[in-house]
Each structure stands twice: as structure tokens, then as C-alpha cells.
Amino acid sequence: MLKHFYVTLLDLPEALPFAFVPTVNLEEVDKDAKKEAEADLKLQKFTVQLMKKIGEDFAFIGDDIIGEKFYKRFLFEKNGFMEVMTGVPAVISAHFTTKTRANKFAEALRQTIKNQVKDKKISAILMSAVEVSEDEASRLSFETWEKLRNIRSTNKGGA
View 1 (cartoon, rainbow, N blue to C red):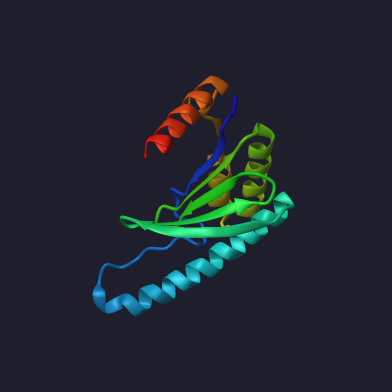
View 2 (view 1 turned 90 degrees about the vertical axis):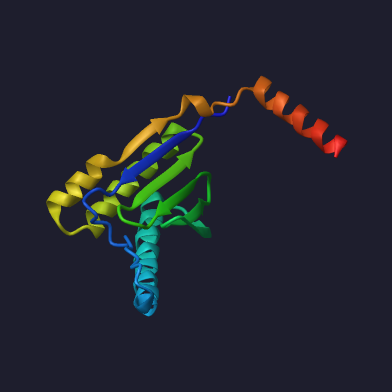
């Protein structure tokens, strides 16, 4: 069975350096572009430091704007991926197939927060907000996988 472990952080104190608040004023589009570029550079610095703490490389695999939320996605070298919502409040969500990897990422995330968020109280709040969870519902048994594969091949053949 495939297990799914995930690490989440919700930046309620709005202290992560890359959080980006877009304006809705059309006259300030240029300011928004500059703010977004600065936020992207801060996210890059944050992510590079995070990956150094984990001890592996990563790849930026794309971004999306869904509603008023900006999503950036990264693929890890060994396994797993991370999605960062850069709107306020920022959210970091990373996904893994082993609890060991999830715990390693969580510890690296806490260390990165400690280094990047200068206010000690807020840094402590954010570090304690890092959660590792297992999603039992995402388990995929061989039988379920086989049924899905059969449905998919039946639909492909009938198309």
C-alpha cells in the first residue's frame, strides 16, 4: 500500500519573508509586479536554505494562480514535492511517501524558519505550527490500483 505523509505550515502571524499581498488597484500593477518579484527572490532564498538543511537538490516545477492565491511548486531530488501558497497567510505543504522523509523535512523547515524569521517569539510560534500527518484516506491498496488500471485501460480501448 502507498502511504501519504505530509508536512504543513500555516503562517498565521504572517511572518514568512516571501508572503505576498497583491493590491486590487489597477493603477498599482507595476508596484505589484515589483512586490511579486521581491517575494519570489525571498522564496527562492528560503527554499535554497531549506534544501541545504535537507541535503538534496530540488526543481521548480511551476506555478499557478487560483482565485487570489499564488502557488509555487517544487519537486525534491529523492522523493516528494512541496507546494507553497505565497498569498497571506502563506502556506507550505510538502508531501512524501515515508514518515522518515516527512520528519526530516519538518525539522529542516523548523531550522529554516529559525534562521529566516528574526523575531524569536514569532519564530517559535511558526516552528511549533509545523505539523507532520499521515493521510490514511490516501492509501492505495494493490486491489484498488488494479481496479483503477482496469477502468483506465477499458476506457482507453473504448475511445
